[in-house]
Image (tube, rainbow over all chains, first blue to last red; front, side, top):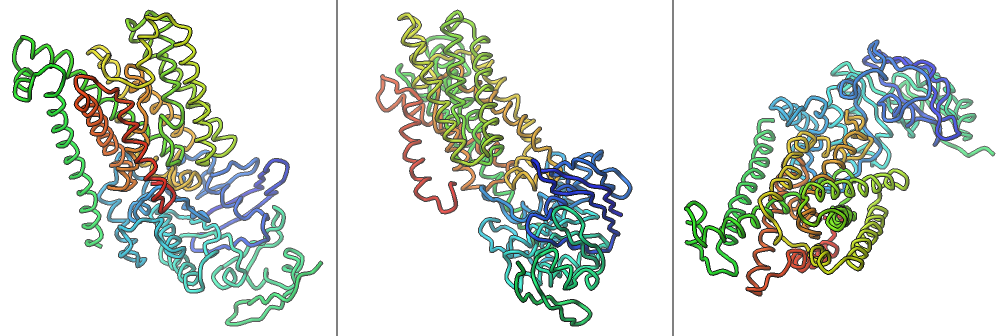
Length: 255
Length: 340
């Protein structure tokens, strides 16, 4: 179980996160939604220890994350950033192999190579294995970064806007890969999302952030209400139900 | 799955073959270099003199040609390795000991030791001071990267400033120095392998070769740094620590390569680029292969400099510039994806 208690993060003089409490069980998918600057990315970065929270504790399977060794943390928490720079050429295989870094001492073992080969196979990336990462399309890149996080063998997966900049087909493919991984391996996932419909469709729970604070937290149907969206996003919407999932149709912004 | 695994194995196997190929070329060029020079000691004589006894041929080979060849190999190895490390830790394809001004400041350190110390007699002082100034500039670059972001442009502008500062300071020493001192340091501005004996070789080889195992151990961390600080941190890399170790080791290697030979440009910039084009960006292979490319380039350039205008010897730094500048333009023009 992942437990976050009273998390605070300050960026210069702005409280980016304030008193965030959160619990996540294995097998669950949690989406974090909220307007730009609400603190979605910051929350993920705190969990992955890319930034250091000012106050509060993060317990990962009962262990305090701030006291874990970085490599140990990398074995149980996988992180997929919004974008990955590629100044230098590196193959897709080697990119996914980076996910095995927490297990490599000098050079990758046979097992590391097999894990990567397996993943590429199961994710339909085998034809790209020896292509250069920077030559791929946006959707392919995202899939490779997903594979890299899976290769870490983590219990908790963090995704920073995994579907932004993707076409409809790749959006569905990426979301289905994430939920497939969660169901199959019994891991848990946290996604920072902009697309409220995708978030509602694929998540067990939704956390709505506003200006660094939790606005509400619960099942998609409970969180995605006309009132909540109006006060957090300042947009008037109608909500349709289809297949027990809420579908949000934006109408106009409110001044 | 077996198929991808085998294909990847074949892919890495090819990189190993390429390194063996480079070693063969290096050996061939070294043999040619051994047989060339002002004295007419030809191919066969010089080769036998390597193993046998005494006489003029033996002295020429062991006192003049061999130290020069070994130094060329060390310098090429060192500059290329340092360039690869600087490019990795700054995530900057234009970084190198030369373009960051670190070679110039190491050179200044050495010149300072020669002028204020006891001329060329105190090799340790020269090497130590060169390392000190190389470190100083490296940390300056790291500091600027931290404050202003490590964009390609910022780094290179800072590097140019540092290069000018230390070249001017070296020129100042030259201007103020006595005739004798000037004579001793003037070769610095061209880069030359002519003043090297076995003692200098000993010191330089320690500085250049000792860091290699540590760099290889860090090769996966260098790969991850290329994927961005965030990814690297999330994959368990202590980014700050790796940067620090990388900068210190690359400075040590730069100082070792520069302190007895003067500033030799372009090798540290060009070798990693050539190597990446052939074998890609995995540092486990890139570090040694790029170093090998550096050795071949420097040894070829030096041999060329000795042959072209014999018995005059063109300083190595001038030859590498002649080869390096057109290549640099070529890199800029082709620039399909950013720089390499």
